[in-house]
Length: 633
Image (tube, rainbow, N blue to C red; front, side, top):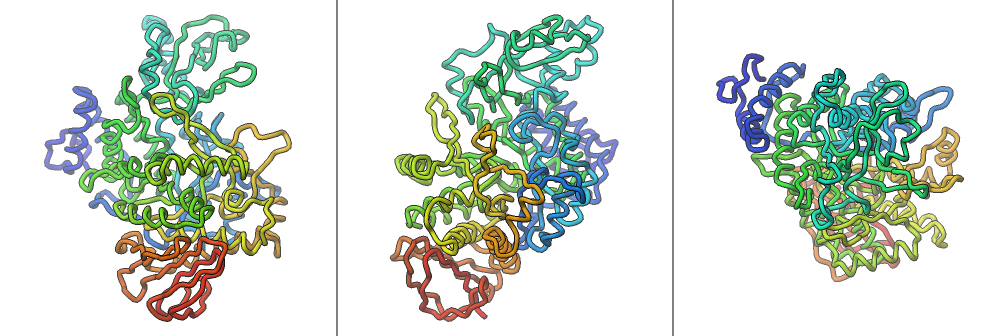
């Protein structure tokens, strides 16, 4: 650890990684880099960590680690467990989920206003309606924890954003200015005259189909309070005593206006060109570590550096700043894992691993498996999935694999570069027209609109509940897709709706946005009925849990084991894999039938299926949608 007196990167007491951090800070921030380095050293020194000995980059998880992804309020409180977080604790204990999951990813549980938690009003608080930090501490006794740091943006109500917008429209000689001065340039604003032209705006990569810039107003209310709000002056006229100023602010994840013309955007981008934003971000990460977070997800990390005239996605400065994030955390809180969330084609996502001597994050999200496996299922053709598996070897097990979808739905951008564009179009048309799954759209640089994601629960995507298919066959299809994802080298993660196998949620008042269908909050009665003995929900839940327990017991799934081998097959519906283990006797031979017909297969010898415990001869037959994980007895 760095001495509190060590503020110079040339000091003998300073770890070599601080020298690299200093180089990046000078490159990105110029002469301000010296002062920022001093602040980071002081921040690191002041943080109390159990270990101050950073090691070389290495994985902090094994084949025994599996993550559950859930909202803090997925399970609603009751008389016994009054808050949703306490209800989650109770569900975890009742279903003995610590035997299944070693890690729980709590999606944003902070005070929020839109985007189901990803528009954070206070990075340092638990929303009252979710529970308390004590509830989270209780959960940490059953499972390691993963928190989100919504890196790119914050709510318009967040003090970082509010104060930055107000500062912009106060005169320095105003007696109130000093309160807001330290937040100068925390966001990126434009006057009407400064706003980029349409040609420049068109070059930006857009994860949403709306404008990258949203109008805002700063005003004094009738009680003398200063406020900033997104939208027009007309929208806020009733609250406004005096208008102080207006303009447009950068909002990558904009939402546009509702039917009444009211601005629905709440998320405002933070300005990482300001070194103070980086400093504040690292303070937040250390706070999360102090609250028990072992893993931290860096949400929308690819957008954090803005540059007009560019895509403002995957910019060189993004990777340099993420290297600072990683090295600072490795020096200050060794053992904490950072995960870069980048919902992009795989080649772009893998860039966020960085180089061997310059890691940007410990792990990246692997979104490709789920949509590609679904495509293989519907086409009964595993050819492209098999080729894709070989491309994952370069990640060396540093993947957070969304096995059965995510809280948002099924991403489509990760299919680009894997499937031909015309095949993606056919696949999306089938899902939207034949399966009535809800699409969300984004824009490419230049303005072309593409499908960003398909919104439905994992069960609904895999099994059309209106089709007359026996439940046993539906369950086989479901577990087949899960087993394929569990085979990939990395850290697998199951979204809670994938664990439960619930259909789309259609509230009586109607769906407010497409993602809502995959974000049901369950009452105690609802979950009890779904998981009652003999119910299909219980069969799905038990089937997934059994599969996860089996995986946690098999060394062949070690993320650091030798690369997966794809065995060619004469039948395009048959996927054959060899998962080598460091101990050769633990190697698993995996076979997956992606068709509605029985398929013959051949193993190297008579082996045992670790999922069912059955002995399998060297020549055997896979039933429709059946899979086996074979190992020497």
